[in-house]
Image (tube, rainbow, N blue to C red; front, side, top):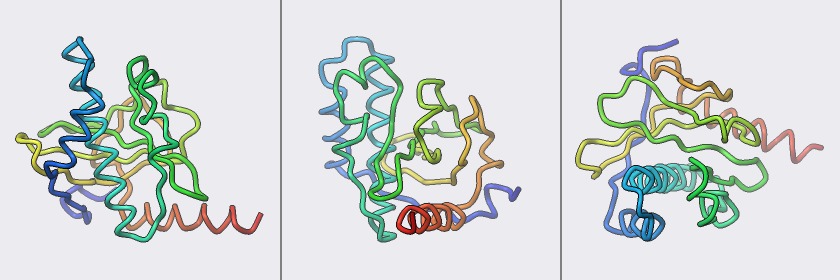
Length: 163
């Protein structure tokens, strides 16, 4: 695998709109750790949705588990439905972290896992890469590239349209 610094990444400025959405989803959660988890998960999904739309993929966040208030309270989910392809899991990665954690509750029903790393101020998110398999922990330098991710999604879309 390539070093993470050799790979192309995609950065998104986390606007007031992104933070307002994350605030809305985490509002009313009394446990501070769970509130932060939901907040970061929402920012990760927002980032991946923005990226995929820029790349010409149609998303459907509203049919994702991460839109269900009860589900996000009970489970650590950050999924995004991609129309005609399937659900991808958008996993937040804290600044300076070297691994992407994938919780057991999202190890099935996903076509891939995308690592989204935040800067310390939560003003920018960078998509580092993806893995098609769920592993509890994936080191960031083991991630496949964003170019591979787009090819992977296109192949799934083509296979589904031909079946």
